[in-house]
Image 1 (cartoon, rainbow over the protein chains, first blue to last red):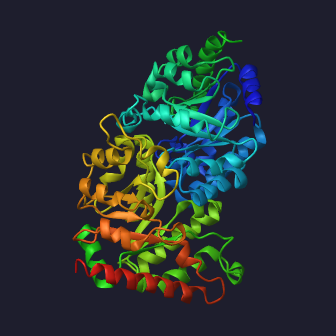
Image 2: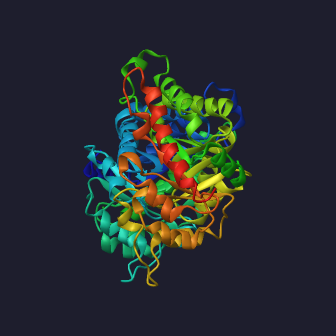
Image 3: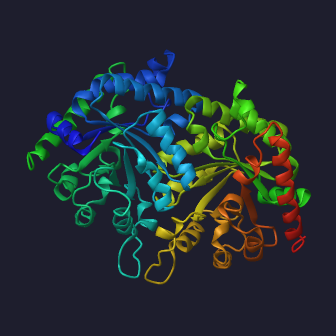
Length: 274
Length: 274
């Protein structure tokens, strides 16, 4: 999916919501445990209920890997279900991968060739040759970690170099040499507030994947105030606050309603550019 | 496995070799492709041939994930095969994971609980709360990326802060607050030469996992000269140079011979401390 299509979808849905499929067998409604594949059954119901209100899904690989082979089967079924039934949805494999060149190439093959997923999150620590193998696939995206939503983001990402440039700024700036706003996005946590202003100085046109609203406490308004650009430039993720909003047999409906609430807030914010 | 046991194994085998199981279906001998599970068949033969000469195995997850569900099955079978037949071998899941706390906790559950693997490689970019969930398992290890073997290691890892401290040094120093030499090791590429001297100033007692000899061109002698400490402190990995040394039906024998050659070099180096 290219940038223009993504923006068209945002305009059509009046939403830039990504639903995070952090599906944990220990947290899904009990009645699903009798299903043959409880994880996929949960995801399918959540997807059907939320698809009208979002433009992307982000399964986090950790949750699937923790169940071994069964988890991988559920992950593949989930991706295929979205692609077949909601082909407009942008799919993000939240994997935070990154390794030496020949290994990153293997990861790229997994996500882009085998699974035909639109994008994958990548960690920048190992530098250029750990990232570029993901960039050789037409129409696919790298979403590079820049300034994450967690407390630990302060440990290294904010370290200033001799010229006063913080590490996340160096990541943003250096990676401009490897990619552009048609094949790279950046992860910036919603909890980072006004740092979005500094980020927009370096990457005015790129899309940002923004986790951290909902359970992690970030503010949608603040993110939009400092982060939105004229093609929206934001994909805002919510996982737990939507998918675990209810634990009864009515869970999917409630998840749909929660997604709809966020979509309404986003529609309001989009008035600034549409 | 604790540090003392690891050192005992090194002394017994006169080796600190780790064989990297970067098993690629496109690179294994053709005659194996008719096996029901060619990846596991390859690994089993390589393990049986190399076990006398090494103290650790390091399957790289990328290679297994690239084959989806089949790859995960082969990965699990490989881990179980080592644990059952060679319980003295230290197993490293080379996964380079790292995510927000609740997600890292899921990865830790996968590798340490579900699979009972000894250690997992973790990327430091997201800071403390992305690493500490891996540290709550008795007898298990985090192997944190510090200074990697690839060219891209220069992009961010060598960046100096205002006080002249390089990022990899900050990672080494800061992570001392989270862990100690009984539950943390560091990845330092064999290609980094005299940087080992600087690293030993910060972490004199820790084990270092050292990739990059063989195909990547690092020197074992140089690594030992600057990196070895009085409990060896080194686990040196070789992947491609051993496992793909031969592509005929004799591949496992040749891999064993290659491992034996490296072991002999290591025995020579170990004379400095034993």
